[in-house]
Length: 82
Image (cartoon, rainbow, N blue to C red; front, side, top):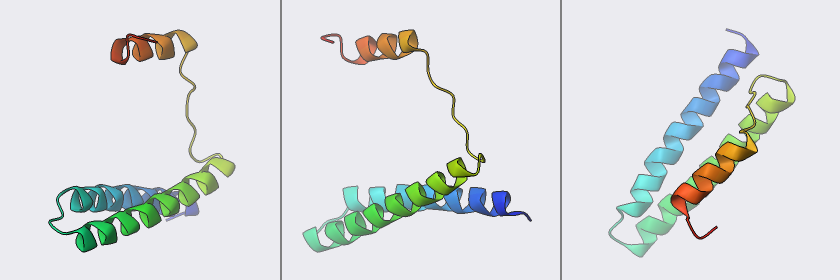
């Protein structure tokens, strides 16, 4: 397994953990539990961002820029006042 595959796995794991922590925070019954999940969520987001930044720097995670017309259409669809 090469470094790119390892990083992809780590990023997928970070995304999965974020989903779990987010739902844990949303469904918590007490403030202490909610805050614990929220803190863990923030840490996982930071870790995911770090992995993403490293992958992007190596050219392993490339994104396409959306055409401005599509951005405007989507913005108007969900927020007609813009």
